[in-house]
Image 1 (cartoon, helix red, strand yellow):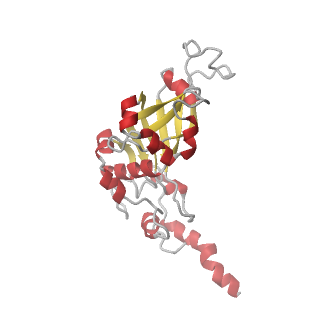
Image 2 (tube, helix red, strand yellow):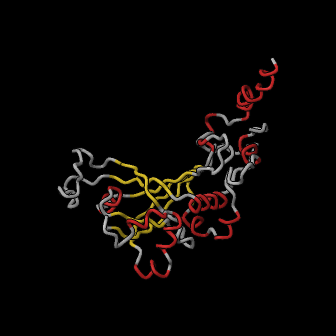
Image 3 (cartoon, rainbow, N blue to C red):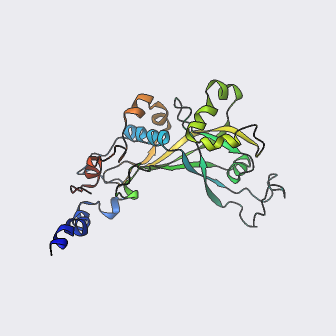
Length: 254
């Protein structure tokens, strides 16, 4: 009996707290006007997105397979590709780094043989999708955490920018293992590119307490380094549950 009483908050607490969660229609959209929570502004959301870009280092590059008559579709580049993939989207994990904070354009080490970069070279649109992974092993809802997609195009980084900007050193801090396939390596042909951001689609969390929608690229680019450094994302601080309780309406300690 004592054991059941002691475990009751853990067994039944989540069900009691569920009444505070948003209505289903506002999980992926913003409510008309009223809300018990302060929804971050577009600029505040842009700051959060730039913070995620700075702290994360792995995302999903999404591209589209080219048409069968495109010059890039030759036997040496098809990697035994099945027929009928023309126009089919594909998303693949890739490394990136926040090495050009003034612009907010992610730095990517492009491996020429990789599918994402072959598709992009063939004219495909490209997006980089990221989501925030809290560093602390707390109980949380991934659906209520920030994620977003950057829409843009790949642009080669000139050699003088690579040298003067310390791109190789910066990228190696995020990905020490990537030194093995940086430009000039004996394994794969590679080169530095930046994803020039043109559009940002942001989902800050549940729609009644986070902004969901497009972030103008001007807001993305105008975020300062100081704003990024001062911003704190959910669960970024160890043991800090205040953000979670405010964001979800759950007052009980987890």
